[in-house]
Length: 461
Image 1: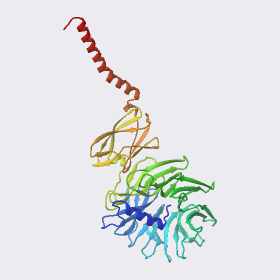
Image 2: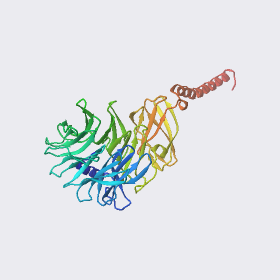
Image 3: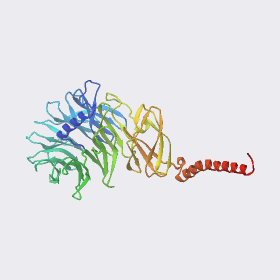
Image 4: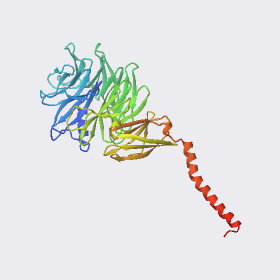
């Protein structure tokens, strides 16, 4: 489950204010930003902001039903969700406390209300975690929803923040060594172990089964590292000159945002295959991704506000959660594939694949990149189509009959198709056709010349 650090919250707010047109607190009740999503199964929860107030909203991906979780005055921020329980930071008492909501019973309940602030929520199987400064520094506390028992999980005199939990293992950021490192604790035994004690800062850990990931700036910029609790081995996941931030993990898939292309995009890494892949490499900033199952969700700044978008790793189709209206709403969302583009024709000539589309929208950037056989291939194309217009363009690469090709727009993945032999002119056929086109005129010219010569030899004037 996702956990947050207050410093990262402030950094995120600063970043969103730098996005052209992005508004963190709206000027009217109709303008809202949606950000900071968490996901479990089919349930996505997030913050919706209006007039400097944040409430918690939710969305069921299966039923396509949107609902409001909190209505209390004062901000409610950074929810986490597990099964049918949503927990969040709540400022209704003029300091940050932890509250929860049961989606099945519709009941709200108090988790932690103590002196000082309680923040950075996380939840796993009935155990809620948070960072707590009631003792004058930040410690990790927990609460067992079944027994009503409060847990005190860190005893060091330093600060501990950004907890995350899986099964009996809790991980957090810890500054006991003068900079931020990653530590872990077994809830059952109370045994504490260091995970990452390296130069620079290691922050905001996430955990799934026996694998921990975190942000790491030991190399002078933020990278993503991981640690296998079973083998006790550290694994660098992405190290490059750009910055990586706010990742998540589920199964073998790690996700993060990356500014290698000039703004933040969503990338993934398959730990089993040891392969990196792009999830959303499109205009605008994609921020704060979360993952559960094969679904990735994130915050994106476009249309003068922040909205939530998602991507299915299995179908490689994108979808929107908010973004079509100014208000949270109940109603259906549409997959991008069905939303506006229809494949008309395509053919193959050597290494060039020609694709023709009809666009149903007024305007759209067709693509900035494309997939072939699950590998990302950079394309130079940035095509703009008008409503109901048809256009064709060429993709350069090593294509063959039977290849799977998926095209991306600025809204995400929109179309997948297989190069079909029934609709393909093979290179050999194209060569024969090209030769005939050029040889026939030459043959006719040669016949004409021969006819003229024969006439002269026969004495005709």
